[in-house]
Length: 265
Image (cartoon, rainbow, N blue to C red; front, side, top):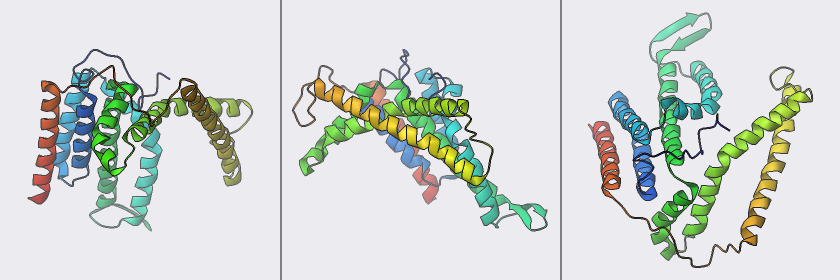
């Protein structure tokens, strides 16, 4: 469990931990939008500097945040292979018979990789500095105005919070099942295509069964405690915005504005 970063809360004493969850969610949304704007290298440098500042203020190690990138490494390698085979524009870097590598294929892969890295690190910072219950409350408060049009704000917030909370649990369960199947002789790396498909099925089926079992246990536990999502409830903890919350949102809006300005100019 210590090797899992995404979805794991770290109880540290930092300025980011003390921030209002609504402010952190809004900052995440503003910077996420900025990430998708084609602002070039300057825009990515600005976003990267902001993310590093957030890591510093939250007292999280860069190594901890980058640990969440491990699951997508193979996806990046696969994407690079596809881009090398498909994209044939830009300067040719390698030409060897029918095989050739052009600059645009590599830059396109790096472009997507940087975007994914920023999004994963930002999400990791949010989940590592915000308790699941506070995250639920923050999402619910932000969605509260949409209840006038019939949007179930509390139910959506609870679903998102549970999904984020179960990410590290499912990763840990996957590793446990892989170790159990490997001890029974299942080889996930070698063998023919049919054998690899069967080995993956031996992982997916128990994982789905375990996931549904955990979901049923959680539902029974919530029902046994009298949980009713449609009932009106009061809050012991009342959210209040402070100066650092407004400053963080102002900085994120400025970053979004800078990226839009670079894009338009």
